[in-house]
Amino acid sequence: MIAELEGLLGVTAAATPTASCAQRLREHLLAVLLCAEKSTVTNLLCTGGRQHEDWSAAYRLYAQDRVDENVLFAEVLHQVVASLGPEEPLMVAMDDTLVRKRGTQIHGVAWRRDPLGPHFQTNLVRGQRYLQFSAAWPLGGGQARMVPIGFFHAPPAGKVAKDADPAQLRQHREEQKQRALNHQALLHMAALRAQCDAARPLIFNGDGSYTNALVLQGLPAQSTYIGRIRKDAKLHTLPRESPAATGRRPSYGPVAPTPEALRLDEAQPWRHVVAFAAGQRHEFRLKTLTPVLWRKSGAGRPLRVVVIAPLAYRLRAGAKLLYRQPAYLICSDPHLPLEKVLQYYLWRWGIEVNFREEKSLLGAGQAQVRTAASNLHLPAVIVAAYALLWVSALRLRQREASLPWLQPPKWRRPVAEEQAPPTTGELLRLLRFEIWSGALRPSTFYAFVSAAPTATKSPKLAPSLPGALFAAV
Image (tube, rainbow, N blue to C red; front, side):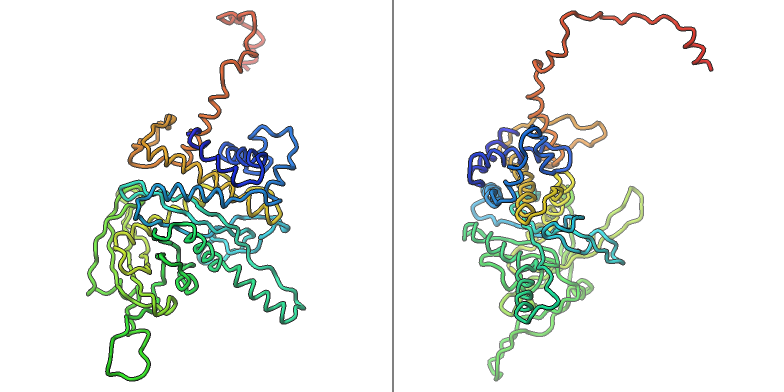
C-alpha cells in the first residue's frame, strides 16, 4: 500500500516550484493520512516529526501560493481515465458543501443556510463554501467508487458600501454573477472537458440546484447532464410539422405531462430495471418520456424524463413497510439507455460519502488559517491526499494484488474483498500499520532491557494485619 502511494506522491515535484517545497508537500500529504487529531498545520508538523523546527515555512507553503493542487488532481484524473475502456464515458458528479467556521476574519466565511437543519425551520450558520467534482472508478457488477478530481473554494461576493455609486453597484452585481455557484460549476465543467480527450464523452451528474438554464444551456460539447428536476416542471413535446401553416415555426409543441402526472398516469406502464445500490442489486420501477422540451434548457435540446418509483424498506425485521420519496430526473441525451441513466444517477451518492469522510476522518476545513490563498490550497491538499489514497487502493485492486488486511472486529460481518471495496477507515488503518510497524523494530526497545535479568517469579507478599483490619472495616 505505501509503495503504491509513494509512486503517486512523485507528482509533488510538478505541483511545487522547488525541491524543498515538494518534500514539504509530500510530508503534509502523508501526515494528513496519519494524523489522529485535528488536521491543523501544527498537528501535521507534529505528525511528521517537525514540532521542534521552524514552522513558518509550512504556513508560507500555502499562504504564498507555492502549491498547485490542480496538478495533484490532474494525476488522479489521469489514473481514473486509465481505468476506463477506450469508449467508456467518464461519469463526474458535482456538488457543494459547507465547512463551518467561527472566525470573523477568515476569508470566504459568510452566513449560510444550515443543510442539516430541520425542514420546518431555516437555520443559519457561518461557514465556507466549497465545490467538489468526483469521478466514477468502475469496479464491475454495477459498482463504482467516486474519487475526487477537484476541490474548489467558491466564496460569494462581498458586501457593497451603502453609499456606493451606480458604477460600483453594477460592478458588484457582475461580481455576484461571476461568483455564483452555478457559474463556477460551469467554468470547471468546461475546464474538465478541455482536460479530457475530445473523443471520450463526459456525463455530469448533479442535484436539483444545478439543474437550471445556466448549466443546461452552457453544457460543454460531447457532454451529457443527468440531474434532479421538480415534480411540477412544465414540459413540452416536440413541435409538429405543419407545412400548410403560415408564420413563424413554433419552437415548442403541446404541453406534456409533468413528472408527477407521468408517475400517476396508469396508462403509462412501469418498466423494471435492475441496478446496483446500497451494497446489492435492486429492482427499480421506472417510467420515462422522451423526447420532451423544457424552456429552461432551450428549444434545441431535447430531454428524457425519468420517474423512479419509491423503494420499500423496513427499519427492522417484521416492522412496518415504509416507502421513500420518488425521484424525478432529466437526461440531456434522449438516446442514452435507461439502465445507464439510472445507474449513473445512483453512483452520484458517492460524492456525499466523500464529503462525510473528508470532514470526519481527514478533517478537511479544520485548519486554522485566514488568508485567501491558504483557504484555497490547504483544504484542497487534504482532499487530494484522500483521492491519492483511494487511487492507490483501486490500482492494487485492479491488479488483483493482495493486501495485508488487519483482522476485523469479531462483531463485523465478513465481506469478501471482491464483492465490496474496502472502507476508508480500513485503508487508513492499513497505511498506519505499514508505516508504524516498520518503525517499531526490536532495536528501538533495547533501552528498556536491563543488564541484570529479573527474577522469573515475583516474591509472595506476607499477610498484613493492618491491611486486613482496614479491609474488614
